[in-house]
Image (cartoon, rainbow, N blue to C red):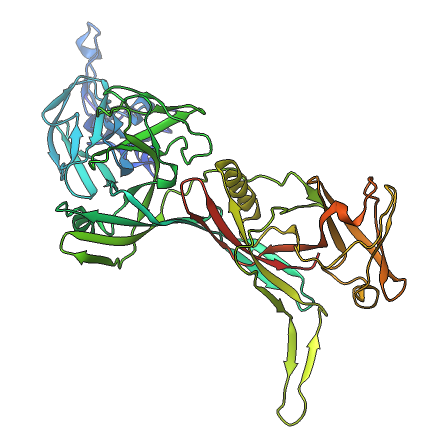
Length: 560
């Protein structure tokens, strides 16, 4: 019988005798799915097929090509994932896992590794042998040795042919271990971002542009002796990332920390610890260690990795945030052995220390701010009008005041004497989001004086006459009143009208009775209540001590 050349083809694949599905399957997929070599058997696997019949006349020889199967789309290649590892900013060594699968049925060897491995500990240094179809997990550890920033590309060469790339990047973080000098206090700044569009009648549209506020710390450091650490930090690490202890939250260890400990007995209530954050433990001698927080309770901190050092009771511990110094930093040296600096760190770790909270007292759909201002300083008040002035310089200017009211900006300072009130203020400010969310606030000015006693069901109250009936009828900002009783109870009411009685008193009508009979002497203060917002997106907390805090809020009245 004659021999002839032919090709076997797959009916499913439509008789295509070539590269199988590899070209279609791999197109557009991640790099680690691409075959490391061209599988010759798939492309043009030619063989000789001989009939097994006993008759010589029935012997037929054919030369053909083998069509690929779907198995060829998964096997005969090397898989590596992930192909990129970003460790982020490290204060302690960190480890990630890399998976390598030899999808060949035969053994494969990693015989060469190209790239800079300084500061890395790898589990697959060549030569490394992989058995057929073996799937192995290797550990890649980023250490704290070497340069401050690592961005490297490692290339693995395989004996089956082809390569695989693994990109690794991370930055090292230095602990700012210089102790804070409390003489200058400690300032924490929060800054939101709001786009405010003001209409001609004074109405506003406010759009929040920043999810989390930017945060910064500013404090003084004092170094004396021959340590030279401040000069070292400025020369080597000024533009790098620091782990900055939150010095206002520093505490002293009641129980020692030993190497291998993963649970620390530390109070975390109203402090800046958070899961996924950092804690710094140190000594007065300057030594310190950074710890990663896995979880916490009111009285304990659970670490992601065991502690390395031995820290006796009495060592300090504080939460920490990641931050950078500005590009220009001033250091003063009163003597050759003394260095002073005011350091300002812009934080990169913006996780909020508290959640946004509403006020315990709400009025007409908005929160309130009923905290009494700290009047150690004069309250500055600006009356601002949205007046348009048209002046052609040949006659008297024309002035148009469309809102027909002033928008008043007051700067009130508040004293927060304990951590509970500080946490409450943080939550309240988080709910304001800078200038975005309005609230009700008393004017804290004795603009209203109750003139006569009134009954518990009274909705008409006589007040000392000051022209309210003439000038304050339906005037925005003068339509609500706050009564502060001597027992600390607040009564917030809407004013429906002022009526002239005589030249001494006027009648103030309110929307609902107070529900308690009162005399003029029963009130600490009776004042107007204004709908307002913060005038600035930036708020500063000034810590006089680690417990006593002052905060000044510029407050602007707005239309309801």
